[in-house]
Image (cartoon, rainbow, N blue to C red; front, side, top):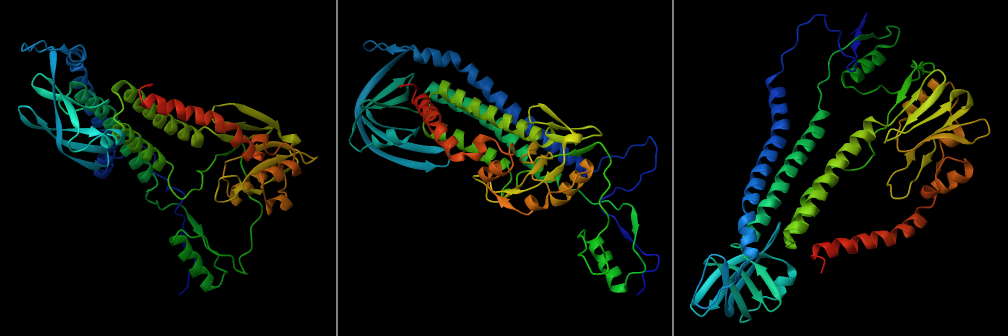
Length: 439
């Protein structure tokens, strides 16, 4: 089989489209995809708004319940409550994913009554068969059960109903946003390859090598080097050249932690039976944290960049801060492999060095490939430092070898951890104090 005048497909470059003002119609799958992607957050927001409206409508009932006074004698009104003593005849606790539920059977003077409520571990420890209880009746329903100093709000309490509605008003939109975000991130990389420009295969190569090149092109796999295929010259880079960071190489997507946070915090708040006002603050802070994490991740990937032009090298940070270095001061480029504290794999870090070996500009957490480092050096028109290129070092050792390459805090992670332990413990103590109602 001969490949005379044969060509292979370049599956990366797009095919030139004919000019014109006609627009392609979206496919049915694309319409369904965007409808789902936009419909889930909108449906979650609509459901959360409906629950929030329903919770606000209970404000008057909750305020009346809070201001209720004990009924006097046999006279009962809609704004008073009665307390009946009895014993706990039977109970059972069901452990669920969103909290524990206790079914209680109460032995009262006029017979047995049953109710249920969501409980925490402290309330469950107080439940014992035969324990004396006090049942609070409000408008004909059991709204609370007291076992000594432990009080349990039951399902018929207006406060209980309002707390559940407000929890759902926060949880449903959060789940909608998380599902839409996970769907977008998962599906964005599944793009179909378009047949692009044709690159000629050298017909002077042996037939076996021509077949290998064509097979590698169709499978999108770069061909391995053979003795007859020699490496080309240094790549020519057009200025301005822009280098952007890659995502952190981890074993799981970054949004898995956000999903765990969005599901774990409401479950914990519900399990601890946190008071309504405190639960609203905690859930609001959780939603704000998730939104801020998504915004910062987008900014981390799209806002951070390093631009090389004819006269300078400009690095733009996450928050938009710009640092400029003159190209005439850059003598060589180094890309050592650094084993950073807390990371499972080493990080290739790009360092711009002057003639004396001092670091003028460091590019941490770019996770650049070998090819990008070569292109960056070609854009700067400086050589790569082969000694640092193949070495594996630590931040503290690199700080001693190359001045200015690593900050003090990164070079001393254990000292920074010790300095941060006290503020973290104080923050955790304040958080637990807030969950207990500042008691």
